Image (cartoon, rainbow, N blue to C red; front, side):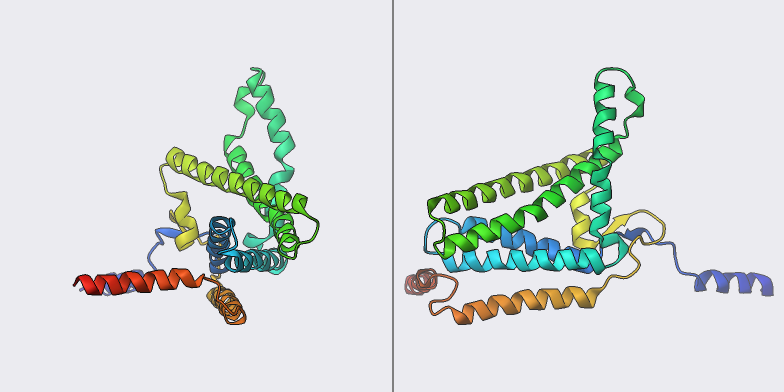
Length: 252
């Protein structure tokens, strides 16, 4: 065997293979996203009546705590997670709207950056959701403590429904862009990676911080469970499940 050929083969095998995916979202951001979504979904489904009130309140507190984490991480975290990136995207909004209006009038159709418009809508949805958490949780806290009367309860319900509308718009936007680009954009928040060769946009995954965030939320839920004399989930749910199991055994 030719010595030079052997050396070339050895060098090629020692080089890392070109990555087929790139990391674009780190682990803390992904864990925050899913905990935030789960907390809102649970809080919205348990909003009516007294039966699930403690669980509803606990999930509301969780959203407030997650907001605090996201703000701190957005100020002190890595560049890709900075809130300043979202604000810069929104800062270009007025100029983009003017260019879109000019295109609608037939003045300069080719000058519209439609990709920028997509990023603008995504950033607007994210910022709106984060901004709505504060009035949502404050009005909920006041309602829970029976401050202010019925108008605060109505305000809490209104903000919650507004939050739901923004969430649905956010999901519709992701679904539309996924169809347009022929790729599942929601997977970014699952694996943190997108298809395509090239360097990772997020160099460090920060898995330990993500794990600490998850443990902190689970510990808070466990603490709230222990503090509540009746538990967060109504006893009727467990008794109903037990009755169902007994009946199933009797049938056997």
